[in-house]
Image 1 (cartoon, rainbow, N blue to C red):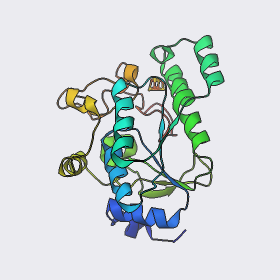
Image 2: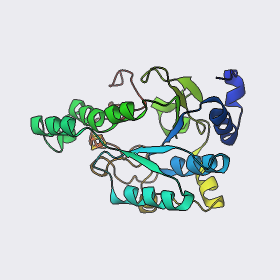
Image 3: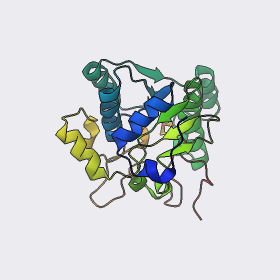
Length: 237
Ligand code: SF4
């Protein structure tokens, strides 16, 4: 890995961070949720490398519009998107023991569902990679306010996590999308500001937090993260 000081990487543009990442990590993958940040990162990466690797987690509960986006992106850039599913034995065990919609029963079961449908499949999918790129931004939530542009991934040993858009605002993301006429997830036009699984995401009202539509039925003290990017104590004090 070419060593660069944190201050230097923080001052680089997202394109420059991606360029550095491609030069530094032979096995680099973009993990895409197909929200607005994914549109930006895939576009930027495709301008640097034609053979960019993209993977996405198909939890089995995604809205149809997310599947539509996967195909639109594949078509536009001519790239493969690795669609990663949960382990079927894990799913059967979880649903059999609890319920199909177990996430409605308690925050603990919601986190269990996210672990089975997201975290474990991601851990399996990252095997064989050196680093992964995520669309995290500091302004998205308090839990993301300390997001580093480049950091060791403590959840996935030996990997590096790269967030080229960490310092970007929502406005910068959408300016890039409009300027470059990128495809974007259709639910944004229906008032959604953050998009995950269909039963766990709703549109937000003006003035609400960007992530207020995620697991909205839970107490405000619950951390609105699925575990992919958050491993701290799960209830805020
Ligand atoms: S967002 Fe909801 S449906 Fe999706 S994995 Fe998490 S709890 Fe399960």
